[in-house]
Image (cartoon, rainbow, N blue to C red; front, side, top):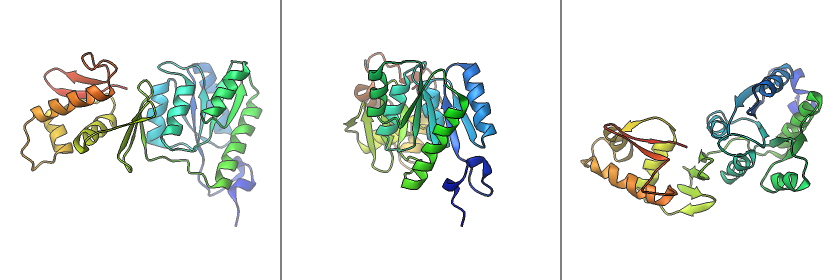
Length: 247
């Protein structure tokens, strides 16, 4: 039986095409990397900032992440750290124009698997990516993850299986309904939920609970995750409608 790790990816027939998430805020570079990866036989996902990268990561579960260090809405280091804190061992290759050894060491210490310095040769980048995917396949490391990386700015992760929420790596003590409410909002960042919808999702359609219960639980959550609970920037009230989560 043919082992897909024994041959070049672009030569495989009938095997699953690896998905690579490329994260970079330079559109021209993003296009060039994407073009070359597709030509080499990869499926390509893209993101241009840290929060978008985490959203794509959790929804698409790529087989490898190519991650620029300098990004809007958070650094590549932040994204790498949160992916690792979520429990995922997906290979991460970091791109950087920085040449300081301390920066490269820091990236490796927080979980990056390899580094490529800008400017780089496209053939070298492709070769490094193939090597990382082969290594991941041979060691049997899972490239998917159950935990949800909710916000790079907050350092907020949710693990539905363990029913754990971590803020900056520290586990938060939430009640069952607080966890369920936060998960419902974080699963759909930016989406506005009215109170009735949240009551049905979290408490159930047949439970007689006043809509003000949602308000109380949102206030409790703000006290636990917001930097300034009196001036929330993540758990937001949409006047006359309900609530939304903004990463």
